[in-house]
Amino acid sequence: MKDKLSNCPLIVEKVSHNYGSIGVLYDLNLKVYAGEVVVLVGPSGCGKTTLLNLLSGHNEPTSGSIRREGIIRTIYQHDGLFPWLTVSENIFIGLRSIHNTEERTKELHELLMLIHMEDFKNHYPHQLSGGMRQRVELARVLAGDSDILLMDEPFSALDYQARLRMRRELNRLLETRPRTVVFVTHDIEEAAQLADRVLVLSKRPASICRELKITAPRPRGLTDPAVITAMTEILTELGLNTEEA
Amino acid sequence: MTKSNTLPFVLPIVVLIGFLSLWYLITYINLFPAYALPSPGDVLNSFREELLSGRLVNDIIASLWRVAVGFSIASILGIPAGLWLGQKLNARHAFVPMLNFFRFLSPLAWIPFAILWFHIGDKPAIFLIFMATFFPLALATMVAVASIPSIYFRVAQDYDYKGVELLTKVTFPAVLPQIITALRVSYGISWVVIVAAEMVGCQDGLGYGIWEARNGLRLDSAVCYMIVIGLLGMGIDRLLAQLTKLRGVRWGYER
Image (cartoon, rainbow over the protein chains, first blue to last red):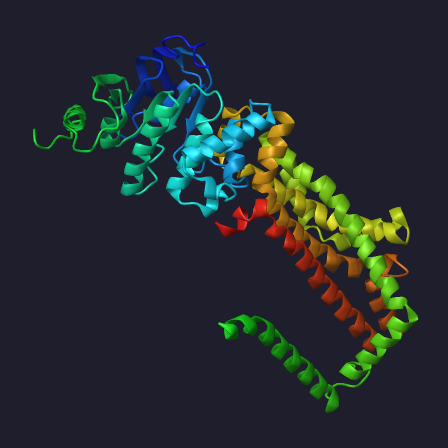
């Protein structure tokens, strides 16, 4: 299903973006390789979400170009599920392109099993915990033939322990269903645990001020040396490493 | 456990009995002349009389029919109008002042026009019900649509919902809980208006019944009609309240 994709499903070339007179992004270049997990970190208000909106095609950049290949889906911070639909019906939305009912039902069951929510398939989002809701969102974006996942601080509304579990969950899901991921977060720990590549954005107008490859295999524990090294480097880049200061 | 379960049923009955006793007491000591305040017994007698003559049932059917027709027309036109206005900012700019103007205009102000345009019978009453409920329904739907969280539309766009499908699968379910509330509120308005409307433009109906009772100085009959109006209004509201128990709208009332 994925062989239609070229090596680089997302290419950002010389993109700048302004809101009125405020420059948000400046001369940004980025190539995301197929199957790669790219995590964007940066100070709050630096334009991370703006960049995601440009990547998804929701907004057009003021200048520069963005090339995308494949089906793009976004996971939002919270409330991305339709509250009037059950868990199953919400996941069905991700399977809209499959017209064969039998195939669609089979896929739904697989996804429900994948996120361990078979018992909750007829529940409505307001009856679930925040972590469960985000798991349903994960199932929905992974459903069918999506290629690129854009994640806009998807776990930031959860408590710390739920966040840790969701990171593990995401790693596990991506292992069974590999996707190209662009993940925005302000959580440096999250970046170090999840990313193949971390991009640190500068203050507004943002450009990429540091690129960090993490080659250690996932899942990575919190105390994994690779994670600690990556966190130290990101913190230093953001000017937050107090040990050095 | 059982005590807290039965209290909601017992307490209103206690209040009702208290109220009836007070009423009986006031009439028993002749605080007001009998023609000005009928006793519970008089009302019960008149109730039997109206029921046996078939007039009460006939009036109930006439009023229910008028409310049903007027309210249905207002819903069928008002809710889509609100859905449309909620999505079009310029349309809102254009129409909202006018809609608000008519909303604040008492539907009873239309009585002279209703009679001149539609003469007597069902039509003027239906027209007045329509005028009383169309504007609040359209405005409530419009406000609900305009305040749908934008994230739903972003998700809809991600999954390629467009046109009619966007309207029926996203916009409409997103506002359905508020539409149900608006229906209940405007049904209440229409039930109030029907009584006034039937006092002038009709030859039957619950409002006409009260008017007739007044003309014949039969306040016992008037009270009998008032009780029926109140009970029917409550009963139909309970029916409409069942709509809030539909599975797909519970989220709107539980968050």
